View (cartoon, rainbow, N blue to C red):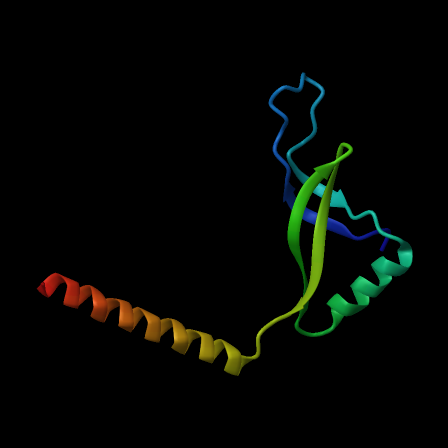
Length: 102
């Protein structure tokens, strides 16, 4: 692998630019040291890990992205989140119906 690439990154065109402009949606190289790239590749290749973009900003004509290595939820965590969301919906429905009665 020659380098880590970010796919489907959309960076809007600068409205005041002329005809020489960049392609807004194209693969972009991640500018990291080889050792950093190797570490990220080894971490991502493990089960359940992924790279998540946290922040995107422009500095000195470069688009910089702050990324984090994240691990997905376990099945029981997902079930807990779904149950919590359903409970909040039920509470919202109950409150909404009591407001209508007034």
